Length: 231
Image (cartoon, rainbow, N blue to C red; front, side):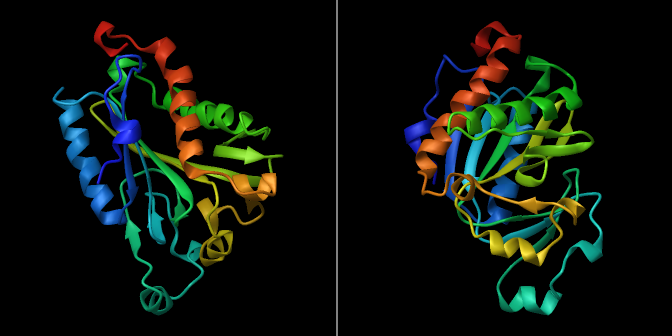
């Protein structure tokens, strides 16, 4: 179900926003594909989807089998799907309490540059975290958002077709970080992972994180929106 509290069309944003809540990964993946086709055909505006997933391991196009630390039999007994997908990047993990964002954006309406798009997602997350007093940044050569260049707080991986994007970012908010022991996150073995709650040492509201996320994406993407009907 779509949470209408943040999904109503807003002419003040260069994109629509939908909250799919806690949704099975395969269901969200299929829905993304449908939205991508609709955005390509101009049947839907660019849309920022926010959601959470039950525990799932996803394998990007650059994934290596040795980056999964658990046997397939263990994953099956724990009901953890291992899903090869078309996004870039290596292995990652989603679980409840992690904010997953799928910006299904028509880059022709912003900037036809995938590298710029990745940096724009990073910038949006950095601005979001700053509203909580968390100083975050980038690590040269490594896509994503980091704390002190050592603890990854947000993984990013995208796929694009005819300048329309899918997949996106996974921001650790209040999720169980112990489950990241199942994998070598993004294939990077010498750095850790963290979350908003771990950095703050206190609970945070997912609803509030989502609200600030939408505001941060609007700050970054609205100034470069090209089409007059997008703002």
